[in-house]
Image (cartoon, rainbow, N blue to C red):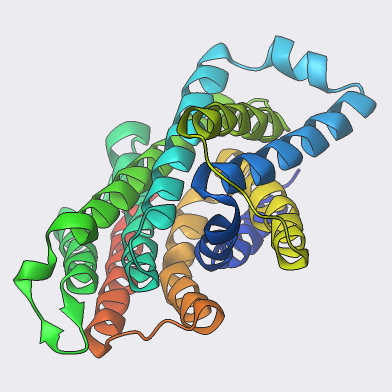
Length: 299
């Protein structure tokens, strides 16, 4: 696959991901956090692995792919999933979901930082520092703002926990993208289906350990189907291809629009009011990723 096509798939993945937080929150409210995640990921993983097996590519993939790629990216994918779903699902209110959405989208800037540190990308350090500070400041604004304005006391309790879980997930996803580039560039097409299946099984184990209760409705089935096919199966597979074969700096930077799209979808789909300063926070995250992009170039 050409670099241009791989990059285009990565950009499409970014658009699909902007719907993840809102749809998953709605689904988690009906099924439970880990039940919703397990359903979407297991279904996506089985479909993806089934397609690979039918094409005779599953066994060669597992046999020929770099073991470091499979181990590192499989672990980071699962860790990211657990952290993000915990942040979104355990948010005490729908308003806190906005905090999770903003904090999660630190990953574009983090991907660029890790690309410099681990892949040898070149960077103008002042620009990278400005971008990082802007992104972190945006998350702080999102966490500490409500209709009354900015309040430091909001950075406590479940509000802070939601932000920290989502930010930790952002670190894992940025590292996933860099690890995939480093160890998966020479092969591994389709491995994301295996990662999804593995993450789904981990989510299923946690679901039974927690004893979640689920309620199935027509809306639940529609949302579960959407989550399975679009932001889970297609988006992750496309991003995996893009991270290994496309223009990583471009797709990581283009994804700076995702927090704006994600918060907009959350506002519309979950009917959550967004405080003015939270929109400013989203803008800072976007600006931070843009500044980071302008300061980084591939080695």
